[in-house]
Amino acid sequence: MQTKENIRMFTQQEMSDLTKIPKWLEGEYKTFSSIVLAPKFPCYFGTLAEKRGEVRYTYIEEDDYRKLPHTLASFLELSRANPDKRQNLTVFFEPEKKEQSLEFYKNKTWEVLQYLHSHDPAPWPEEVPYDSQNRSWEFCFDGEPVFVFSASPAYKKRHSRNYGNSLILLFQPTRLFNGFESDVPEGIKARNIIRTRLLEWDDPEVEIPADSSKLGEKKDYYWKQYIISDDNEPIQGGCPFHMKDKT
Image 1 (cartoon, rainbow, N blue to C red):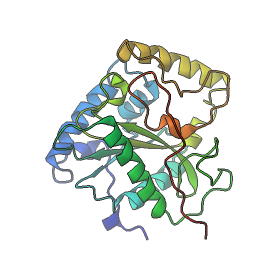
Image 2: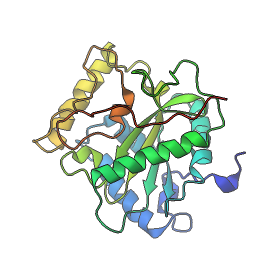
Image 3: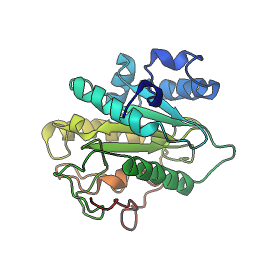
């Protein structure tokens, strides 16, 4: 049951209120916002959402995920009530005390998704395969598909995945991408713009991520885009996500 006590979600204005957020988060949010609002930031959809104050935020300290399921469910409810807004929930994790590898953040990302799945009371949506090894599988929560974007300080070349000292997870309902898929004209146009900016923003050593969709083709293996490599190598192996037994 969702109550005010187990939901922790903030507006842009509240992200500068130290009576609501910890001091470390104030600094991390300022770094994040300055990057997203930069004129040449690759994802102009993200820039526009930040400018409009449409993004919602939360934070995790000491690996305590207990409020995250209720917070994400509350955000998805808010998003469904405002279908014209391209909202996402941005989750900041308390910075690690020492530098960590990309593998560390990869494992932590999947740990968080597993925790959410194990605390999701809603049934899995029928239109999404239950088998995580199916090429069309994607993460779902509260009865709908949700795209996950993982960023961390371990990215040294892909600057577009580094927003400061925190692991940051962005959750966005995939229904917001309707009309912008990789195989429709508007989606192709948007991706061309974003990919051109990515090549200018990221280190010259890295190209467009190997597991990105080919323009004009329907995308499969969404999970490979959640947390990507810091080089030009594709993601190897099967999906690390484990579905709970059906009841």
